[in-house]
Image (cartoon, rainbow, N blue to C red):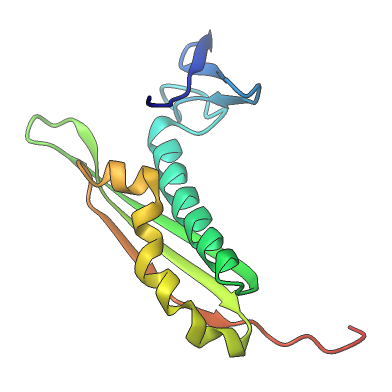
Length: 149
């Protein structure tokens, strides 16, 4: 049996919609000016957020399972917009850069996670069927904390 989810969008004004997820959370989405008022992220930004968050969560989960303390993780998502042959705007590519920070002694232990984490990201692997997604990871060591600071 397959699982899934449902969300509902309700028009509030022009291009602004309220989104209600099946878990009770809500979100406002809108188109940027001049179409909308920019009262929330637009669909392209939501897709980029979903790809970036899924990869970040997947890497975090793998490192947690490997008992690697993740001191910090910063993820940057760059989206390239382009026009197709009919002049319609499309997402031409997504580049994701993950910058995890780990303790110096853990740096050699993260290699296995770097090899497998993308494969567990539901969104990225689904999107790759139609949009090129490049992923790079730049692990670095977290600065050591000094006792008492």
